[in-house]
Amino acid sequence: MKNEKRSRGDFSGISKKFSKNIYDSTKGRLRMAVLKEDLQPLLNGEPCRVLDVGAGLGQANEWFLKKGFEVLHTDISEEMVEAARLRHEELGLADNCRYQTADLATLASNEGQFPIVLCHAVLEWMPDAETALTQLKTLLAPGGTLSLMFYNRNAKLFANAIYGNFDYIERGLKVKKTVRLSPQNPLVPDDVQNILKELGLEVIQKTGVRCFHDYLRNLDDQQRFDELLAIELKYNQQPPYRDLGRYQHWLIKKPENEQ
Image (cartoon, rainbow, N blue to C red; front, top):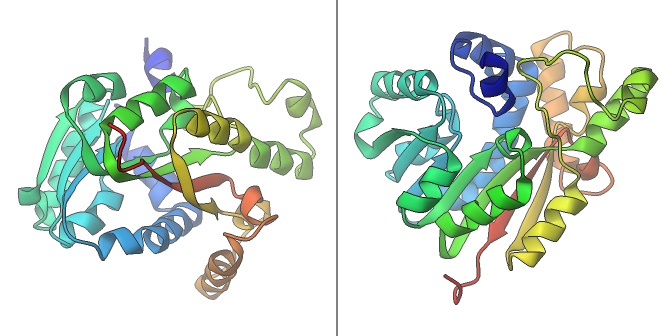
């Protein structure tokens, strides 16, 4: 049962490990810096309702809460939702935030529509990307913006080729034993693009997240990290570097005339 829950992105019981491995690492710091840069136009807009799907510890929606937006913070892990609530309370941000333990299907059936929907590092844990994207469209208000970040299968394959993991590539990037924090269903960007097109959603901006970081052996000090971040921000929307990002962050619009 634990493996089944983990395979769909439920990190109950390992929230502290999740925070340390993801957000306290250079890759996590880089990811958050790129996301904040991309989301700045939304953050500078008129405050509105924001839905954060699979919001984890709530770091991304903190930016919106600080700007006066009303946030619905959701995750399938009750432990993660509670940890986020406590974090927000410590920062004095909880008053504008509602917290809910729910999966995407439940949200799509019960929560109405939002001008801004955040869905970061969730899609690669879902069994069916098309169903998930359809549900996200349902939650997005006409003219609204979806901030979608997903794990890039092409970049995963490329990185493993560099590291010499040829047998892993031959197995179709399938591991013999599930790694708890490793997404199980990385996505091919062209496949995601095709689904979005079929749904009538327009991708207005594409950014690669960690276009260079994951191909380095190590970063030895803060100065080198700052230099790398500058390079990432300079090239992460330019092909071919953008397409090598371990994650893809896309801003997606729903037409004004579509419910």
